Image (cartoon, rainbow over all chains, first blue to last red; front, side, top):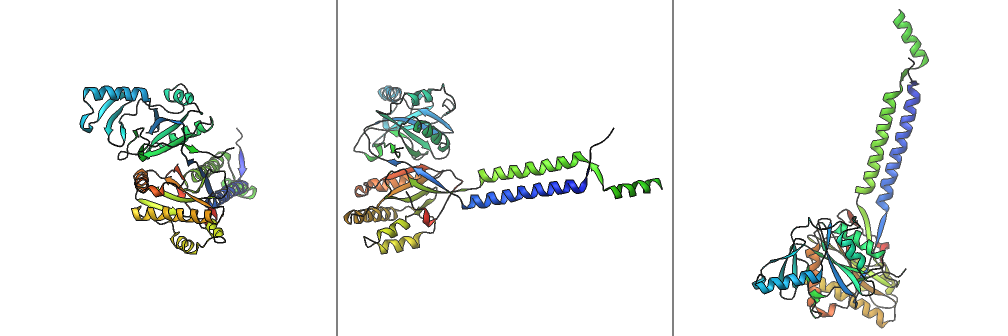
Length: 199
Length: 187
């Protein structure tokens, strides 16, 4: 049987040339990346008559805070006396607990995110909630956990941007928890959308 | 004798070797270098500068980056130098030039109110001189920077006179690197 044989000089030449070119590409790429400065366009917050629809982003998952369900459950718990003296109580909604705090309204404790959605699922509750937003009446407001929510928040914001829906956000963590209140004279209860440059 | 003759013939022809191991090494090296190249483009920190998504070209960003243990401020300088034509801002300009070293500072009440008052003063001077110049604040929040951001917000809320300044807020990834490029003054 005849074997494929090749001259070693010829092969060494090919290998060294190819490796040399790749090394050159790698070096050029590093030099280029070192010099490159990315411009990040940041939308500016502004006052608006639009109503906020609340979402929480944590553990690379997102949940829509249905105000009707949340507040109905919170009132039921309050009637039972569960929320008295600043106690944390279960909201029976997507693994979220609640607490009434002065000047912060209803503080939300997202404990279990296993029931929350990812943005990839087109049939998910959160996608339905996002698709239902009316650009003339509403904007999306995100409470974003600073440890694990940035990625999904940016993804969702981009999804809304493509649909001309405004959005605003607030970084949160276990010391600065998401809270919902509607007292316009309390600065912590003001939720602003961000304006984007008109195209 | 026969062995020696064969060796001599091989030497005269040039060394013939099997194609397979060389192709294997070749593809391996190519693969590894391509992988390193891709890894480099994704993992190497990205340098960034924040600009405001504002239509008007006269608005200039004062960047404040919130990190877990403090803030880094990047005040605008290049555009402020242009304001010198209309308003006496030499003192602020000199201060900012010295301050611009990307060092981590503690967001004390004094520091934050000083920054915001300085911005207000410049905006007010520019307005009075009918010079198209307005500074606004862009916050870049890094992972773990929420506490620092809330601390700043609280300070601003406690000083109502500082509330008039426009604010933008962006979530930044840990591998997005700050730059101190003087030419990169926003918008």
